[in-house]
Length: 348
Image 1: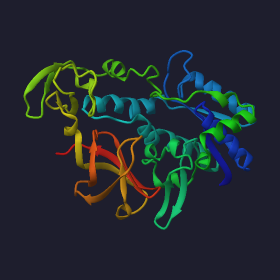
Image 2: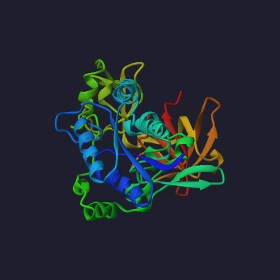
Image 3: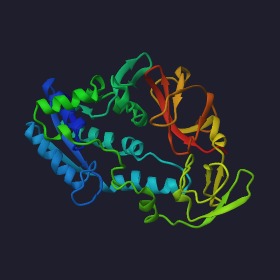
């Protein structure tokens, strides 16, 4: 294969500067944008139709070829349906993780193979590093933008051919590079919402696609203390919008899809000292795990990993953690290296 790289472009500043840096480093660069959903007219959310056109224009102004892959059907099945189904089952999914696992990296690699290119690249803030146990990821220079948490499901063979140019840059440097090169994306705002729900109303989105049946709100002893209009409106750790008054604040501690119940309790009832993790993807040997991170914006907690014998692991935490929701990612680290990751499962 050639010293070529397929650079995924989302229409934002990070992916545009990624392609530019690769070009300036001497790579033969081809840009690709994925059409993942229809979006709203005029929307510039990631991978919407208008964003595809904007990304194409940005690539052409940099003198780079641009491809568009229509992945709406795949994205709908592997990300959007999973998102809706997870909430209906009482779990809290991360659609960006699902997209990385099933869509973006595979599609970019497919195009690279067709073009005879060796590498793929994205604008994620992470680094690819070689360890004695093989290739893995490391946290980026800009820790405030660290995206290793959402990249854990990338297959090891795909990670081995991936380049993350922004791993060695700070965000302000990326914007400065874009401004100096007169890229139109230099001052585009950060994307905060789920790409296919740009208004942020994920409950409304789910209710359009999944039945929401009324049920009981119960306390930790199983006593009924209220009613809800659908478990899709609730997630573990939630405080607002429960609809039950009490002398002390109540939090959702469990969502039971089988009985259609929402369990509430005090804040301390959210504390857990162990979690079960399945759908595992290891880059290094599990014995190297030092800590686990269970939310995107949380600190890793020292832990011990034990085999559970059912294609999952039991993770013993050195200190209690609040509000670990089934469906969320658990990512394992050794220092700044990613050892592996998986999905938090309900204890059964």
